[in-house]
Length: 119
Image (cartoon, rainbow, N blue to C red):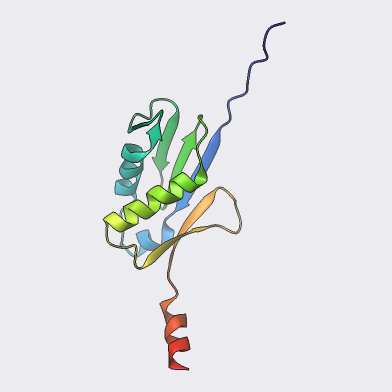
């Protein structure tokens, strides 16, 4: 008997950067190139080949992978990018409530903390 052909598991992750891009805090194209240079495939960074595809539109970066890839790894790289551009103090990476494969960049709720400090 011939072995069954295994189906390639296609995983797609999205990072929604709409709020910082609208406020012109970060550029979506530089974030896409950062991910393309830093994602490791087979232990080598930047060697994406046909396995991983990184694309962007106006406010979202989409990472599509044929190889197994963890969503947590994408969060790690996003935090690394924010730290490199010195906006990590104002932005955080949060998983979306609506879709499990989407991360959102949101601002810390500084106004809520100021109200609590006043009380």
